[in-house]
Amino acid sequence: PINYNSILQGLCAAGAAKIAKDCFHYLKNSGCKVDQTAYNILITEFCAQGDLNSADELLEEMISNDLAPDASTCLKLI
Image 1: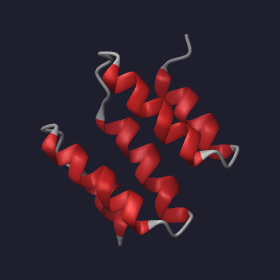
Image 2: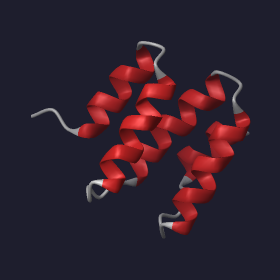
Image 3: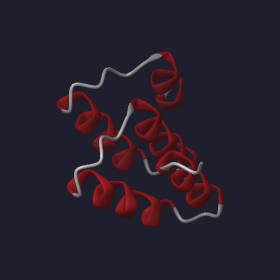
Image 4: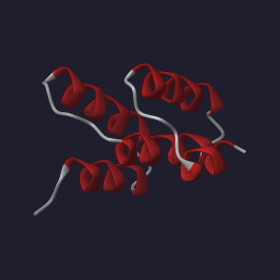
């Protein structure tokens, strides 16, 4: 089955990071429990695009939602 992480990954791969972020927040606001993987997908894409402000905002949001960054998250931000 396709899950929301697959959709987010596909949107990012298609160069639609902004749409992926909007979709991500829609899911969150609709009561879906987003996980560390979802944050990492978006953080990775925004870092790749050089949009470190968006990546940092997502990192702060991740932490405020009691999801600890893992080694993968940290490596993407370096």
